[in-house]
Length: 271
Length: 324
Image (cartoon, rainbow over all chains, first blue to last red):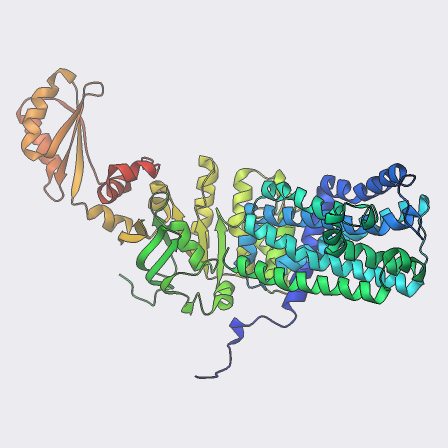
């Protein structure tokens, strides 16, 4: 086999993924700015959800060792990432249908760039929504009980969860290529969001559901974020150490990202 | 037919989607520096071929090179020399024309300043300078398509691949697009376009390839294809429709096949072998029979005639053939 050097025309510069991700991210954010209806709904809904849930359930649900508001806010942030992911999937599918993906794929840009660009632009929206939700939370009694560093780690974990789950939603988008089909999968995500410890301690669920509810990633993410924002005082309510929960959450992120990024790229190249 | 290296070389290309065969061992070449048209009915394999040339799809078998570059083995290099547009590559409706071009230029790997400069130049060429900073969704259909087709010019591609570029355009916008495409070719760009409109192929293309069921049926210049039919159509208009039967009888010896008469227009038309000098003969015959001729003309076959003779009437019907 010859090992002749690859001609420059066949190579993309090492910085191509970075620069093109920025190009696509900016394009997506410009789109959002010009057609803000969907984004406004997405960014404000966690606030609405949080305030409603707090009003309705705070008196009824008792979480040992934590106020219900402190318990609820981290879960709202995770839910926000899941709903944001569905929006990412819809955005990607619209790009496929409109011919934008074909345009991108016929240009000398890294295959990943349209996907990573979407991931980053939607992360920005999710973080804005999260900031509003936290602000609303603070207004209705939420407090950070952990140190600054721990809370920053919490923010970092939230970002990692968003970037990892993105690949699951990208797979959904590239395999269905259809915004309606994507919307129709919403109940599956509701199942994960509701059969979890997001709104109630798992112990209150029917016995046969508890195993799934406690072990599935949404619960792990919720608990890890609670641990990082509420400090050691929350450990009895969460049942595990902060280290355990964070490691478990990061492991889920890594697993989801690796599996679904591989599937997405495979589908994307053959689209 | 080709004097130089073909800029696109397609050899024995197969592509199937499940049980549907889109390309069935297609081989053809495209010459540089002109418009080549891929003509065929719906489902003939035109779009599949364009997608393979644009590196969006890998063929199951066969070899395809663009500018000497293998599309499967060297997709990045191919993408540097092509521009794709038409049915399958779009512009962003919410961005302005300029924003769209700068984005495409950046993805063609131009530095930011150069991308802006190149975009301004291309907007000028597209006659979109005035509308440059308006969102594309406010553009007319013709403006939008011009931007769509012209967007890849920021990357100075050697070859433009256009999938049904004039679909959905009104006649004025279509003429405008044609003159724009001719201008591009004059400046050295090679264009391969697919079309279902025979008129479009006839107006634009220096070479036409008709494909059907994923194989090449025939190719050549429009003139070669028409001449290949070997006949011309003679049309005679009479002063007095009452004399039609008599005239038809007189002309019968010249005709190849049946004569068609129209009472309403008082015309007779028939096919005659090319080079048989049928037109003067027809006029002489009618004169001799004392039938007054109002008008007479010989019409070379149109591309419609070529299409129908090559693919049969059924296929031609589905191609939305328009009279040229």
